[in-house]
Length: 139
Image 1: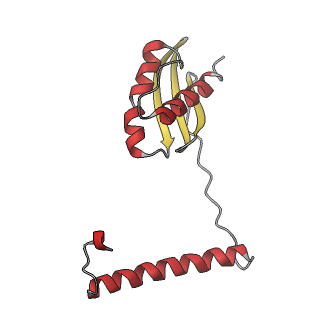
Image 2 (image 1 turned 60 degrees about the vertical axis):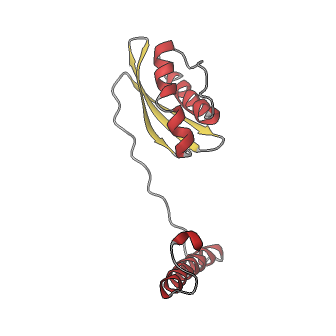
């Protein structure tokens, strides 16, 4: 725990270690109880669907690295007017490279076939796939 700022052998370090050990132990007991059927697994609350206007569409895609990306695409007639990211779980450094560059490029090109951002390929592809998924719903 050198990076923790606590000197080896200090009382603060001992307290910190004991606290972490108790947290880990508590979680382990909880997981074992669920595994052996002594407790029920918690159920995640279902996310409420966002209110959509007639020209708004939700798209979802999975990144190979960062999990699910959910976007809301707003159309102006047959043109992409806006792309809003509703949720994502990507690595912050990669996400910061891809967003807002990819949505801006998609709007400018009016196509999901745009170049990926160097150093954020999977994040870029996930945004493009989510937008494409939303556009498949446009009538």
